[in-house]
Length: 382
Ligand SMILES: [Fe+2]
Image (cartoon, rainbow, N blue to C red; front, side, top):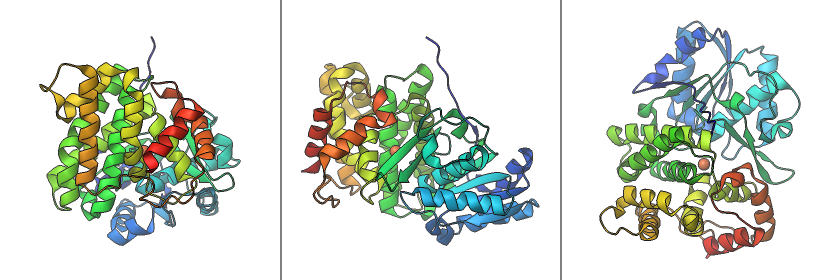
C-alpha cells in the first residue's frame, strides 16, 4: 500500500508568535493580508502579530471580521481586500474559523471563481500564495491540515474543502497564546481535538504515520483537558493541549475523519453552535455505532482512557473508553444532548442527507445508511 503524509513546517513553543515576520521573509512575501477575528483582536494577539510584521519591515492589511462558523461572504470580502491592497501572502491568526477563512481567501486569489467551486476533494488547480497560520485555540488543527470549512448560506451547508494545497507553508504554534481563552472555549475546542484524534485513529484511511499522532494527541488531551479548562494560567497544560491539537490535526489531515464530523457539519450549516460542543455530543453515540467495525482500535482508545488492566475483552475496553469520554465531557461542563444546546424542530432527515454527502463520511470505519444517521441524530438529541 502506498501512503502519503502532508505536514507544514512547524514552529512550536512559548512566544513563537514573534517568528511570524522572519518566517514571511523566508517565504519571499512583502505585503501580508492578516485574517483574524474580533475576539482574538480584543485579546491582543492580532496586534502582536501585526507588530511583529512591522518590526520585520513587512507591510500588512487587516481583515478582522471573521465570525464563528464563517460563511462565503467573509471569503469574498477577504479576497477583495487582498486584491485591492495588492497583497502577496496570507496570515491567519485565530481559531479554526479565522484560519479556514484565511485558507479560503488564498484559494480564491490564486484560483479565481467562487469558494463553492472548490467544495470536496482535490478541486484546487493552481498554487496558493504563501500562507502562515497561528492558532489561538487548541482544537481545530487547521494550522497543519489540508481542510477548510466554510458555510454556504444558500444551501445551509458547511462545505468541506480538502486539498493538499491547503496545508499551510508554516504553522506557528504558541502555547502562551492559549492563556487568554475562557474555559468554555478551552473545553469545546479541546473536545474537538479529541474527536479529531479518535476519528482519525479509526478512519479507514489511517496509516502508521497518522496513528502515532492520533494516539499521542489522545493521551495528551485525556491527561490535560481537565486542568487546561480549569485554569487559564496553567501553561504546562496549555503546552500539552497545543501539542495535542496539532498532532490530532496532523492525524486527521492525512487520515480524514468520520461520521462525527460529517454529522456535525450538517448541524453547523443550519445552527449557530460551537463545533466542538456538537462533536462531543455526537462522539459517544458514533463510537458505540462504530465499535464493531474496529474492536481492537477502540480497545486501544479505551486503554488510553483508563481501561488497561480492567479487562482483556476488546469490546469491553471500547465501551470503557466511551464512558470515560462521557465523564470527561461532563467534568468540563460540556452539554450532553442536542436538545440542550437549542436545536429547535430539527429536520434530522434533511440533516442526515447532508451528512451522507460530506467528504468526512467516506472514511468512517462502518458503513452508514440514511436510517443509521437519522437514528444517531435522534439518540444524540434526547
Ligand atoms: Fe473538528
